Length: 161
Image (tube, rainbow, N blue to C red):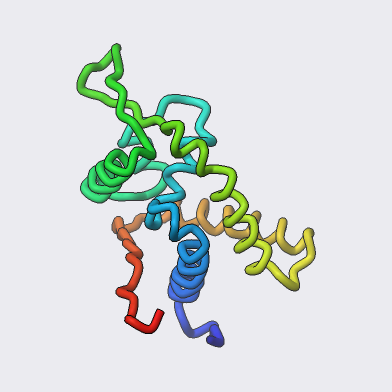
C-alpha cells in the first residue's frame, strides 16, 4: 500500500500495526497468548507491582477489556492475581513460571519481526524512527482527545490454512 500525505497518518500506522501484529501472532500462535504479549512484556519489564489500572493506563486498554484479558491470562496460567495487603480492594498482577518460561521465545519472535520490519533501515535510521514515534506520542498526548480503543482479533481461519 502506498501512503499519501492526504491520508491521516494514524490510518497508515493502524494498517502497519495490523500487519505487524498479524506477523507476530503467526510466530507466537502455538503459545495460546492470543495478542496479549504486550501485557506479559510490560509485567516482565516493570520494576514495581502492577495493578490492572496501571496496565490500563500504560497500555491504553479500557478497563472492561483489561478484565477480560486478565481473566484469559489467568485461565491459561500466564498471570496470577495477588491481593495488595495495604489495600485489600486492589490486586497485583504477576507473571507465573509458565509465562516466564515463554518470555525468551516471545522476545525472539518480536526481535525477528522487528528485524524484518526494519529491513533496509540503518541502525541510526531505526534509532531516529523510534525517537520520532516517541515524540509523536508525546505531542498527541498533549492534545485534547477522545479515548479510542482498538481491539485486534485474529481473523477466522479458512479450511485451506
